[in-house]
Image 1 (tube, chains in turn blue, cyan):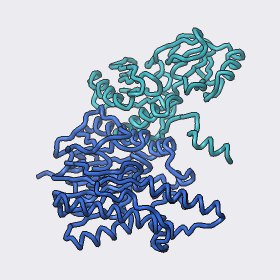
Image 2 (cartoon, each protein chain N blue to C red; image 1 turned 180 degrees about the vertical axis):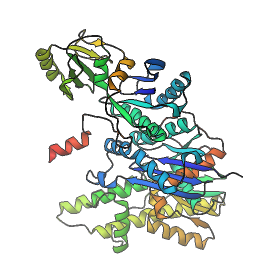
Image 3 (tube, rainbow over the protein chains, first blue to last red; image 1 turned 90 degrees about the vertical axis):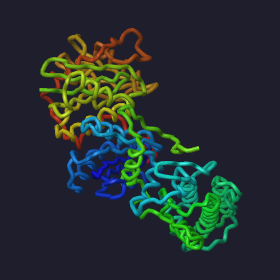
Image 4 (cartoon, helix red, strand yellow; image 1 turned 45 degrees about the vertical axis):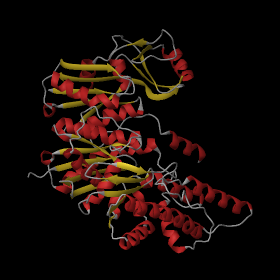
Length: 337
Length: 210
């Protein structure tokens, strides 16, 4: 069978990333320009600033990709692109670039949902085995997903308010930590002790999550201590917060595996980089004989490699867009009821 | 010589394929807020109508501002990518000068494009289309002062909420624009960016704080 090379583009937030992926499994080359230093001084991503940076870098990233991969545009079979969800102004740059390439090269344009990309990041480590449960944890998602086969997504639970990554970033901000806060909270949590009495976030029988309560509890605690003139122990706060959140996520994930009678778990999204979450899931999966896969660190943050992996399976399912593909700030991945 | 003209800076999207001094195809559609959906398919249609293959294009002209930030980025991203793929540098076109070039009026011309509820982008040109007042982001008070000073002919492509009956709404004269710009400097596709004429609000706010 002829090899299929996908040129993939991801620009949904603050990374301009392009990649060439062979047959949905093999990364030929990825080039990513991150804007993290630009947004740091604002304490978060500023959409207009992000869009301007994407347009400055889009063809430079493409040129570098072709140079480093030593491939020609004529070798490309598919153009995969993140169409959503994400920052609309950022998505548009990658999308217009992808549509133009598709037009000029006359190659199929494959629309990829950002979260499908995160799940398929695991396919670059090892071919996914079905059925599986995917735990998608990021700044915008905390979802449990059931996949019976390639590119079939059924949501079995999700967050009712804040996403886990969002809660981490807010807690970091309240504690006076730098942006992006998630990795710093994770690091400090290892140094601290679980001393603060924080509530468990939605510790019930459902597969849903809610992190606004624990976030408010942290805000109130920090605020009250400040009013009393006391300092909070930031490391201990990080440990207490992280323990509550990760314990509930781990518990609900293991419950889903058991109830759906599934032996494969994949971790996906930016928060897949969290060391305590990996540790807890690894331990529980070993105990219960579950095959557990998580992406390497480089595939946890936004990158086009994962989009190229997903695009291949979307293409096999016949998901092909025309030139009128639009970016969507919000969009539902779930195609199975 | 085959030239491609792309304008997504205002309400209308205009795409044209021009051969020497003849328009082979022209698509102009009023699709507010839908530029991101249709521009590339209009581009394909314009090329197909002109019976030109994508790699037969010799020159790319793109209106790079000022105008709607998102609108500008759509046209400029398409032009940059296209230019890179066929390895052709790009001629950036001023939206304001393009409007001035499209009038038949001889004399001092002020082009006006709405920016937001209270502000506008303007430029003032003499009969040779030389800039006599730098293109800028400004308010109605400054515009009124400039009108008193220069007595310009006022021209725009989109309806404004000011200066009733004084603005002459025109459509772009693409041949005239290309003729004027064909000897202007081309820009490397990697370096081409929109000419926003305005910083992002977050950066302006930060400057005020500092």
